[in-house]
Image (cartoon, rainbow, N blue to C red; front, side, top):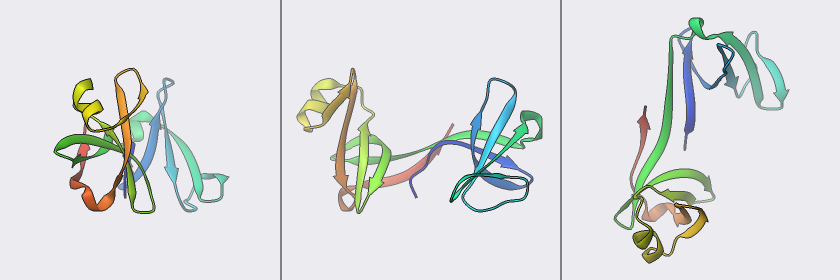
Length: 122
């Protein structure tokens, strides 16, 4: 599973999360969970005070492709959407990456070519 975003530990369980400026944390679950409201099928939310959260951290999935470091930003049917993390435009251009914004280079990579796929926590 490719993850990129906040995770919160609340009552001993890990949830996708979104911290708010209001001192609250929005927790998200994929299945009905006590006290969570259904936003749409397969997506449930509960808002809790930040002090109730045992741990809040950011996770992203990284990899190596064609000898360079990338952040994985999506996946679809055996392909990974990767964003170049090297910060060097000539290298990105040499890899044939698509420029999606100033200094942001991405591509679809066959999952079979991906190496060192791992999660990093901040």
